Image 1 (cartoon, rainbow, N blue to C red):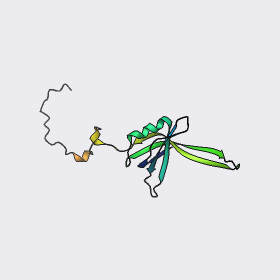
Image 2 (spheres, rainbow, N blue to C red; image 1 turned 90 degrees about the horizontal axis):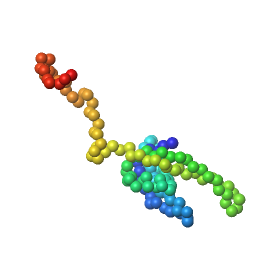
Image 3 (tube, rainbow, N blue to C red; image 1 turned 60 degrees about the vertical axis):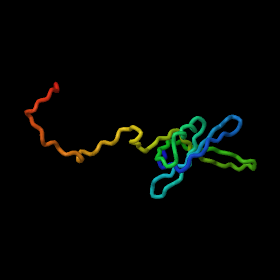
Image 4 (tube, rainbow, N blue to C red; image 1 turned 180 degrees about the vertical axis):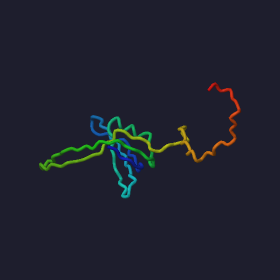
Length: 125
């Protein structure tokens, strides 16, 4: 599954317990008729994936839905869901960073009208 939108917030990496469990959260705002603010958590080594992203960037996040069951001390069973990210991609193209600019449409060019079939060139084909 995937979530696409603009990064609204990126949290700091949090460490829990003696086992060193790490978690980092990012909030993405979807771009649809009724925008949603979706919180996605990245865990363990995946927390580092967020280091290269900033608030305001358009991204696509590959996610897994996670669910778990918990029984409280009173014997009541509760269910919890989480959205875990495992990949994040930048959807913005940055021409200033050296990427190839888009090719303009063919209508942007005028046809050549000064061709002469008798002109020879030195090309071998």
